[in-house]
View 1 (cartoon, rainbow, N blue to C red):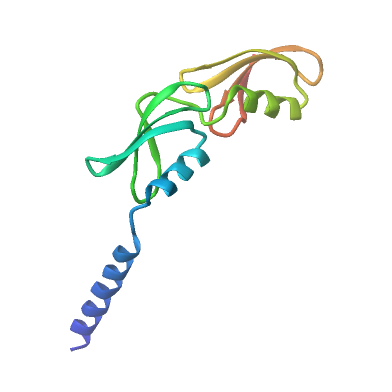
View 2 (spheres, rainbow, N blue to C red):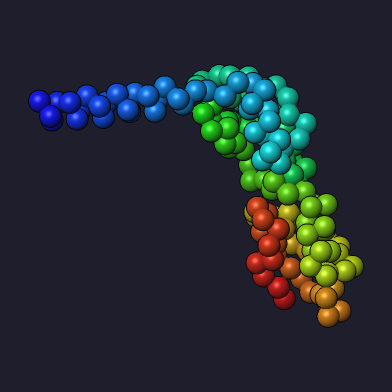
Length: 137
């Protein structure tokens, strides 16, 4: 009796949790994509069980997206950066870097040439998700 009551309660809780997972609507998906750094979002449609859209990534690439209807997580058809070149320049400026130039997104990271806060010429590798410097030379 206690075992069957426990199973019934467990199944009831699992069913309630599943019922709370509702698909995001078109407006919510658009907001999620904007929050993830995408701009110029268009052709947003629901097909094959996921949302589909076209947009521009933070690094200016035109991409096609597939979007999880529950979480809003975007899956681009090519590697992109949620941060724009301006975001990278701003992040480095705040850290004291000057003469920032040669900013380029390649193979998932930003490469940048600049002068360090001490005035030395440096080449930086910057994380495309956070703007954190991950390498210098």
